[in-house]
Length: 212
Image 1 (spheres, helix red, strand yellow):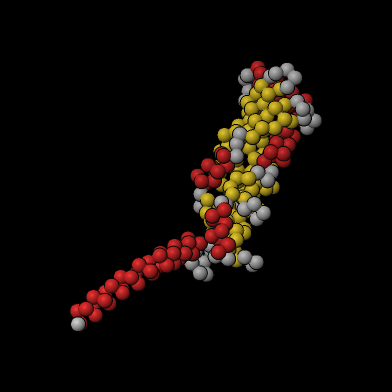
Image 2 (cartoon, rainbow, N blue to C red):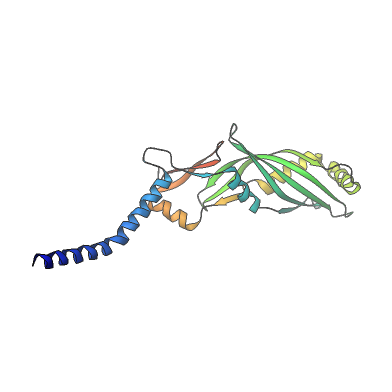
């Protein structure tokens, strides 16, 4: 009799384990997500390393622009560097220029720096306050020299072209977007992305309480 009761108890425990198993697994996943966002009382952040951010920025290029109806320009091959001391990024781009009138071409480099901001409307990380630092074309090529002459003849010259490129092509450029699944997870936890900070470790997006 005691043996039968023991067997019935074991079967009950096994059934209870089967029922609780999925619930415990779901709880473990939820706890794991909470731990991924940081412990209570500590900053909750999404961190993008310099390598990760470089790969994300690279996806946004090449970018093309017709400028002043005179030149067709293409920006490509971004090389990124973090500037934690100023809370900004520095990016070097390859510039390919094609003249529309004479058919000449040129190749150069555009260096700019930028801050970052989070846009809640589409859960995107964007360049902001873009500043062109330098636009140089490679010397020693006849076609490049002709293109530089064309650029220099435009109002404001080569450096104005660099500023126009920064304003028209790079300002507000999307470099990262949270996917729908991550956004839903954050909403379930009552969190939303907020401040964006450039650190030596990478770019950190601080998670804040919804409505906070």
